[in-house]
Image 1 (cartoon, protein in one colour):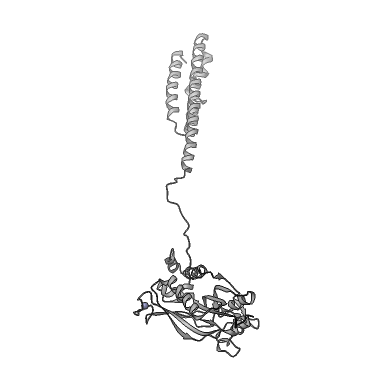
Image 2 (image 1 turned 135 degrees about the horizontal axis):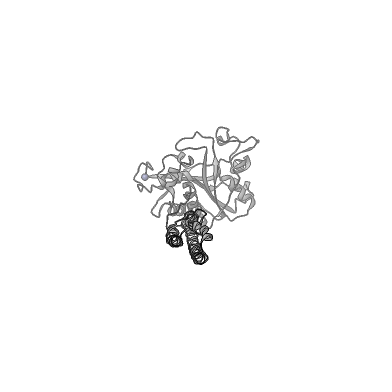
Length: 348
Ligand SMILES: [Zn+2]
């Protein structure tokens, strides 16, 4: 090879090489450029191999130039490799970057069941008046569910037709939260002021206004000198707290074995204010049963009916929730349909 040719090949290769290295956009590109520029078949290698056949002066001069070109290209390779490695890391980091401004995928929050909302509102009204919450078992014995409540064995409520008995003789699913009245009085001396939320069970055909399971809140107050006026005042305060202060209440005589006298409380309809509408019919909404605790019931629990008197009341939570939310079929509360339930999110 002519020394002049060799020199111009080396200088061309330096130019070509620097351009090739600068143009490499990936580590693979760069590796291919290195093979093309300094590999065994590269023009630079051909010059390198021809050096031995040159005279000593030309060999020294071209040898130095060849080493210079090789060093220049290798420096350029190293610099480019570093840059590409850095940017591939940047690319990885970019890919992993979290955009904190994007809206998140948030789980859908549940909401309180409408009956739970109504129950806690009722319980709240009474705990603010100083009542405490009491609870009892859902499987009851006949003493607490019937006899102690002055419901004798021949009473129609005790027939198999109305109650749901379990396999153990003498035990049944409680038909009233009133059973908890007995349990409370058996374990505590007056004064007693308790509010008892809970499920009760009846053997009833299920329809729009009846279910075999429903929820009650029971109230009991026993103390010295409690009169029917206290009962009326308490229920009036409850109706006002629950349905608004302009509600009127009405008590009609009614019969329950465990109270004497007994009454049914109705409030003036909060939709039509007593004029009569689709929700109430005649302007009044029947809310609950109540009465003065029967002396026999007090006696059954070891209280002296000459010294203590009391009142009790019980209301169905569904009966309150239906007019309150305009729900016309009780079964909706128990079907677990999200389309129904989600309407109560944030309901007061
Ligand atoms: Zn009405």
